[in-house]
Amino acid sequence: MDSTPTRPLQTASLEASSPFEMRVNLSAGVSESAIKQALQSGDIGFLHSFTTGSAVDGPGVRLVAWTSGCQFKCLYCHNPDTWLLSNGMPVPMARAVDELKKYRHGLQVMSGGLTVSGGEPLMQDRFVMRLFTAAKEMGVHTALDTNGFLGDRLSDDELDKIDLVLLDIKGWDPDRHRYVTGKDNAPTLAFARRLASRKRPVWVRFVLVPGLTDHPDDVAHIAAFCAEQGNVQRVDVLPFHQMGQYKWEKLGLDYALHDVEPPTNDLVEKVCGQFRAVGLVAH
Ligand code: SF4
Image (cartoon, rainbow, N blue to C red; front, side, top):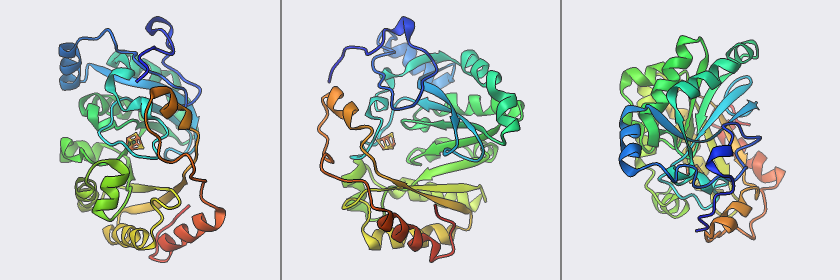
């Protein structure tokens, strides 16, 4: 892996124009014990960045906090620089709350809110819940974008404080899911069932990669599962793209999808149709 920071720690900005900006080694000077303490307390978060103006990460216009650290290694990941916690910038809770305060009125006017995405936010569950608590105290809508693998880290009370979960379901067949992500899908599905049992609103996100995640039986099973839960308000079918390819190359990672084209409109419509066929709203 290239260990050269693309931006020195001192000048890295908390705000980025997009999560596609590559960021590495921004916590290189932070000791392991300080990281451990930060994870336990939530006093400090490790963030790729904040971005503003998103209209695709929850309702309305969103401020998005992009966390570092992910236990999955999705073959199609477009932000592999967020896999390592230490690539994120150490951000004290007070600074993150100040960032939110800057935008709170605009977010409320535009019927939006705060989304925490990643990476995998639940790698930093204490920081995320403290930031969400601050958001709720300001009257800001909260959304958690998660692969669900670490859903057990949140108590029922905490789940009830999150206005919306954007749940990434990456596959149905366990072997294919392990091939695509490196991990089992059972914890994700268990988290989905738990959210349903608590009647928490969920938007499911499904990344569509031709030849990798478009197996018709898999899609049909995911669709049936989502419909059964009764709390899935919509399904976002996210077409694969190659915008993150350069990050894999710069990080010295093996990228398996060089030759994969984005899905055609016909394939996107076909997959959306499978979700709609069981009564779900799909885009
Ligand atoms: S869960 Fe998200 S951040 Fe983690 S590897 Fe997969 S696509 Fe990347």
